[in-house]
Length: 107
Image: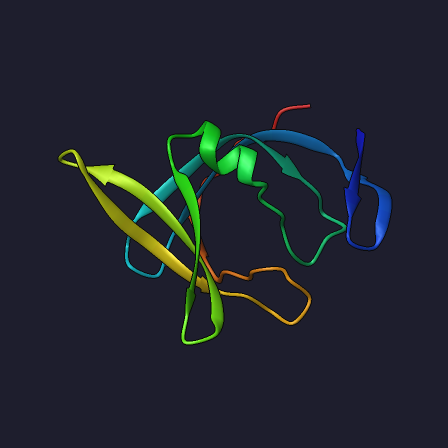
């Protein structure tokens, strides 16, 4: 168990950690090691550090006055945009994913 700081303050949501694998809407499969797990949360959080530590990169850009976050990866030594996320009014970004059926959770 661990505490985590969120936009709402500190919380003891974290029950364990483990491998999280999911599929982006474009079909790209991402795997994050040491992802935090909570049955109490309706949504899961991924930090920039978690994403970068697993070989992906984060970029922000402004298109016509609207802020976007890109999750990028390298394929054949070329940068590829895996996901483009619009910024919410809260300053956060939201991404809908499909969970892969199997998952591992370690205490």
